[in-house]
Image 1: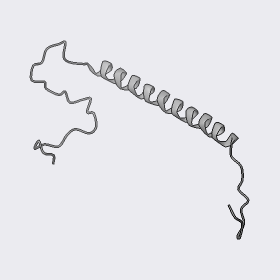
Image 2: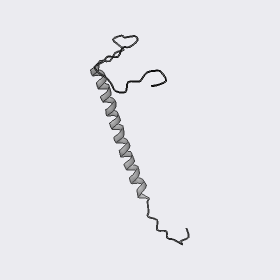
Image 3: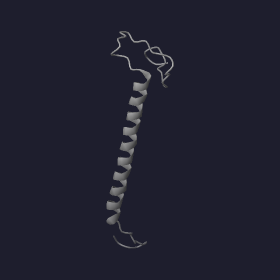
Image 4: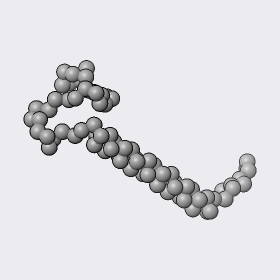
Length: 78
């Protein structure tokens, strides 16, 4: 239970409509519009994840260009 006194909906229940306080036709999204919005959001998320992964790969390649193996041994002064 939350501080507001009710359990929030975690999953979308497309079959049970949610009643709005002021229910005008302009404020309601129908099921297909809502699903399309969710798909666009998920696609944007996938694109962002791909961009982040490519950026990390490029950064790794650039950082490894200057990497050299350290060959210090016991007793060496550094």
